[in-house]
Length: 194
Image (cartoon, rainbow, N blue to C red; front, side):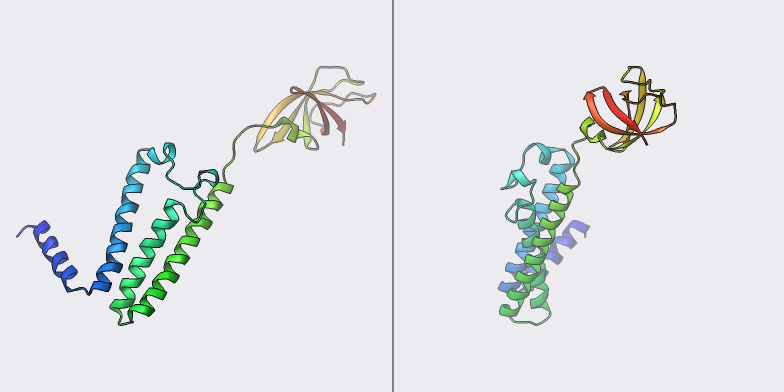
């Protein structure tokens, strides 16, 4: 006898032996498991990124009523209800346990989706964020707002090089620490020695 035939026979016998309530709970769970597999396969091909399936696109699927939390609810609801009935509990108690398990999984998925949304960074470098930062002089900064100096500023996990001006009477040598006080333009900062 071939393995697919043995598996089909086992599943048919198992399903046929279940009560109607267990068939409903396990049917919901199996349907939700099928949807999870479909979503995983679809996302492997990048389709989930382009075609947003969530009801609330604005929050990246972090809505309680978007596809992923609902499928998670159905999955946990079905398995918890079926398992509760299999352990001898009444349909009413199994339904309460199933609702609690489904609700907990649904809220957990929403929390995870929202947490991952907060981790997103757009990657755009904002040079205005350099104001107030401590920088290292790369090329000596001439006195009295003369051009020619350069600084290295740590900014958003990177280092950038900017032209630097200062109002003091003495030049600021290389490797000295300075504080960025303003941006004159997108390539030049006004600094003061520390």
